[in-house]
Amino acid sequence: MASTELFDDAARRHGPAVLRVCRAVLGVGPDADDAWSETFLAALRAWPDIANDTNLEAWLVRVAQRKAVDVIRARARRLTLVDNLPDAPAAPGVIESSDASELWDYVAGLPERQRLAVAYHYFGGLPHAETAELIGGTSAAVRRAAADGVKALRRMCSDERAAEGRSR
Amino acid sequence: MNLDDLERAEITALVPVTEAEIDALRARLVERAEADGLVDVAYRTIDTPVGPLLLAATERGLVRIAYQREGFGSVLHTLAVRLSPRVLEVPMRLDRAARELDEYFSGTRRTFDLPLDAALSSGFRRTVQQILPQIGYGNTQTYKQVAGLVGNPNAVRAVGTACATNPLPIVVPCHRVLRTDGSLGGYVGGPEAKAALLRLEGA
Image (cartoon, rainbow over all chains, first blue to last red; front, side):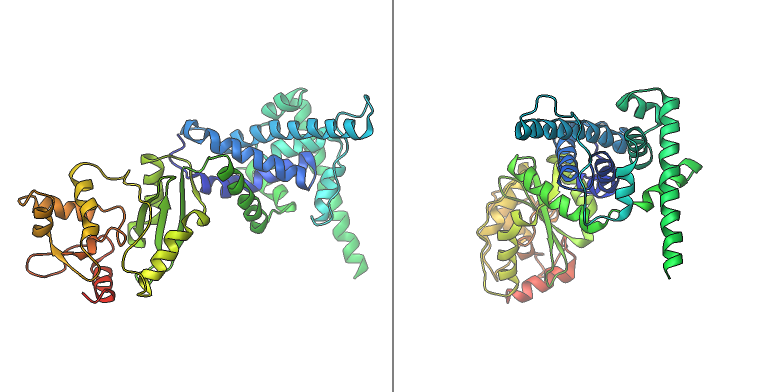
């Protein structure tokens, strides 16, 4: 068991990283919150069996990825039911948020592969090779997507700051 | 921190997550965990005249009361190892114990009416701890008398050990056991706490 860390402490320590991953993958909102809850519930279920030397953050992020995929599938099913369209898109766009910082809108606006590469590598701390296993493609391609995504985020941030500067 | 970690820290700082957000998610998680029967040990802390106390309960009942000097962190780790690693802060599960202790400290309660879980003690210690509630509010017995009560008058030292390792102080009143010469003897909460409890009870 993960005897070196209490579940509560682990949830506090890794909660923010897991939430960032869920938000980057699903958008800010109830879907991301649900994926977070499902991830930590799974962790609590597995807690007695998690080996002492497990990289807990990476373990949680991998579970979060599976839970996010579940949420996306459920979302697609819901849409299919509502629209009664057999060809409804499998992964509808990221839901919008009103209460989160604008930065999350920038993250949501990134091309999907950049967004996922940023989510799992920068927010979740997984190596590029592991991210590639989760989202497909080569490690090198994932590295490029993550770098491009981060570059775009930085540009949007500095544009915003520049705009703020001018408006003062 | 290597360069990668620094860059990661810089990027994550762009999308802050507040403590309040995590607290709200955690509260929902606790509800779900409770509903799914995943909280094996629930705990909370309370403030009392003898300092903060940690209360912990299993499904069977109150299993541990700890004084701050015992180190709450290390007590929780011990619970995780000895009972179950599924230890969660769920104050609601300890509402009744907290209320009864509150009443005890305000002088309106003389006996506790709480389900107890004796999982943390065994053998002779358990026998002694189970007999201690027979010493009524405001009364005291000596270690020697308690040894007689459990039918082993020579086991004075073992009674002392049983009192010192009582996992449920206050509710299981080991503070009512004194030395034969009338001096206080040791106490898991420290001699000041023992004296304060006896003063409260008018012993």
